[in-house]
Length: 224
Image 1 (spheres, rainbow, N blue to C red):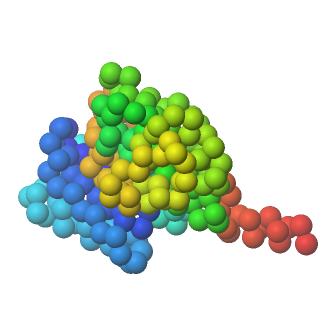
Image 2 (tube, rainbow, N blue to C red):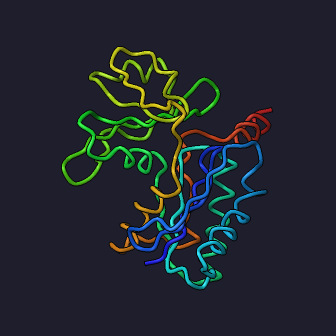
C-alpha cells in the first residue's frame, strides 16, 4: 500500500512516502519557515523523486497532535484536501504515539516530551508489551516539575523538551532534540489503514489538550 504521511506537530515537520513497510523517502527540515510555505513543496518533491504521481497514493496518514496549534491545522487541512481530491482513506496518528513507536522494544518505559510553551510540556508514557508500545497514561499538558514527579521509575525521555525534566528517573535519549518522524507517522498510519482504522476527512480534528491562544482571547473578550 502506497502511503503519504504528514507530520506538522512541531517546527521540524515534514512528509514521508511508504510503499508497504518500505520507507521510500522522508523530508524533514527544522527551520523557521511555516508549514504552509514548505509542506506541499516537500510533498511534490518527494513524489517527483520517487517517480510517483498523487494518483499512485492509496492512503494518507497524518499526525494529529498534541503539538503546535497552527502547524497541526496546516497539516490536517492539506491532508483533508488530498483525501477529498484523490478519494483515498486517511489514518489519524497521535504524535506522541509515533514518537514512542520509534523506541519500540525498549526495556524501559518511554515518555515522549514536547514543548507546549507557556511553561508546560506535552507528554505520555508507554511500555513495550512484546507486540506494541502501549500507552499507560492519558495524553497530558503539564509543568515540567509535575511530569518529573510522575516519573516513578527509570524512563526513557525523547523530544524537544526532554531536557527540561529534572528527575533522577529521567534517561534522556540522545540527541535530546529528537523530534517526531513523518516515517513513523506513516508506519502507524499504514497499520491503521490495513486494519480499517480510517477517519473521514470531515472528522479529522487535532488533539488539543488546552485552549488555543485565539480561543483564550475570545473567552476573555466575552467576559468583558
